[in-house]
Image 1 (cartoon, rainbow, N blue to C red):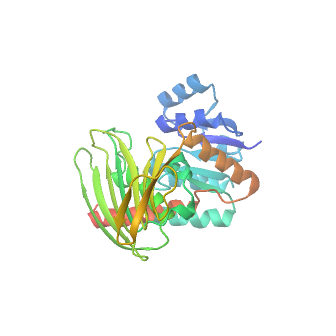
Image 2 (tube, one colour):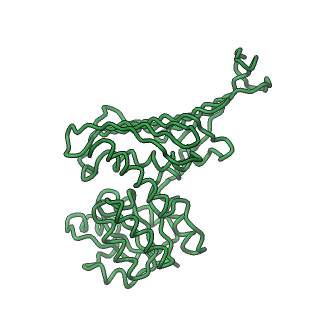
Image 3 (cartoon, rainbow, N blue to C red):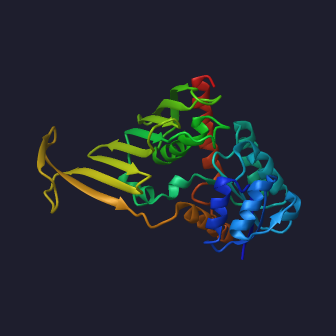
Length: 317
């Protein structure tokens, strides 16, 4: 049995407490200096509150850090000083310099460190296989209605970073050019941003994130030779439209292309039955018990943050 402690029981921290109870972890307790949040967690989950970080750290094998982003680094470094395995919500830290130190310290300590880029576990994404995905152009929209929670960072670190991680995972190439624009509307950091990323293999990604939308949208569209793939993270479903030389059963009407007559094939993948947070925490448990690297490594978190930092610099934030 792997013992785990939770640091931070705000809105997302409470979700993690609930999800951890559906995993093999033994939840020892939590630490949060906010009395109101802590009382709510005790009442809802009947889990012990620890009055200081050190006492909880001394009793666990792993930690789940769900504090506000500016506190990630301090809490993670303290946990590493105790030699604990880390699960850290995204973004991995608030500052790229802190993230670099964290990556190096994890390597020295030899522990498992996973970053909470939860969309990697969305069935709309996991249902697609690597041999299906060779995007040459990507269009991403992540739009949300306004919520004051999360405005301690820009929309790039709050929302867009999800898609940056996904795109970096999909594209076989390095980012060679970043163009971006962002606008502050209701908070002190950009609330809406659009960026155009160019990769060394020629792929281009046009990425938009907004936290002042009238509706929610989380879609990633991939365009590649002979295929168009639409990934809907809210609906947990992907549509795959391909062109084929063969008229297979279920094909739509043929169309004339520069390659001659082609047949349109459409399929849908995904499932609404899973809980992606439970899945990512189970992945963390598996990594801790086997020693294998998690699906989203500390280096993945660093790469996403590094690209987010480049975008914020391009905005001028």
